[in-house]
Image (cartoon, rainbow, N blue to C red; front, side, top):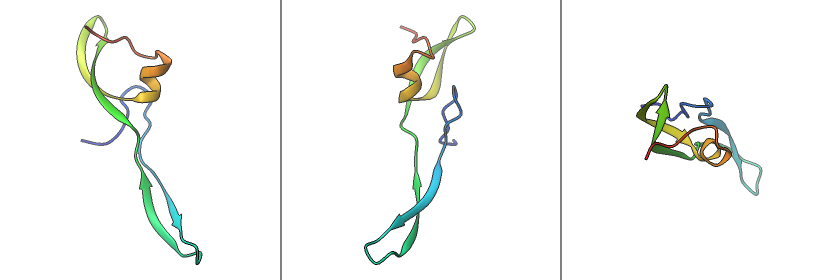
Length: 63
């Protein structure tokens, strides 16, 4: 399973962690995903959705 939001497509972002001595160490920032039940085309489905999509109201939660 890829760590990608199934609504907006947000995924892993890579970069460097920089130490005090200016060494660059590779690291990865991962999206804050939640597996929730949402309504897609009138039917409830479980999807991986980032918390920003949940908060902004881009999705409709199924109860």
